[in-house]
Length: 127
Image 1 (cartoon, rainbow, N blue to C red):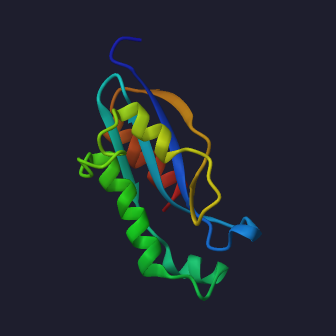
Image 2: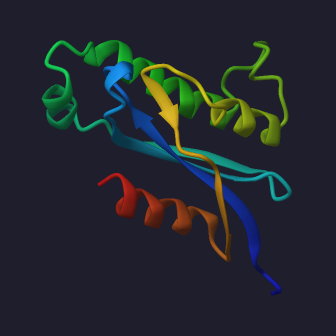
Image 3: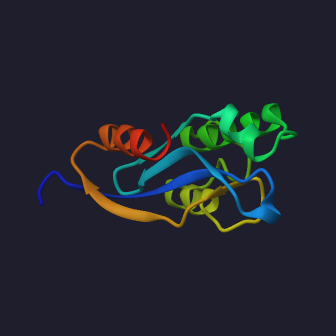
């Protein structure tokens, strides 16, 4: 399997009312720690979100989702999370939590083009 990259991915979910466990998919994180790849792609469907919770704070949720992207891009240098290696940042982002922003369990696969794989997963799971 020359040229193949083993990667892990998780779906980013918005759970506006945690007690109801209803969610919408809002993004994808892809990580290949050996190859130095960690990226997230985010899109918040506000109409869908407001169907689940008409009082959801879109601005705060959007800000929290953007933090996922910044952590993946390494733009949080100087913070405890930003100083972690790629694999540790991915594990931190995908840790099980009971909050408005959650992720699926990590899944894995092989890819020859991780950017293309991120786009494919995003289209399948979020758009």
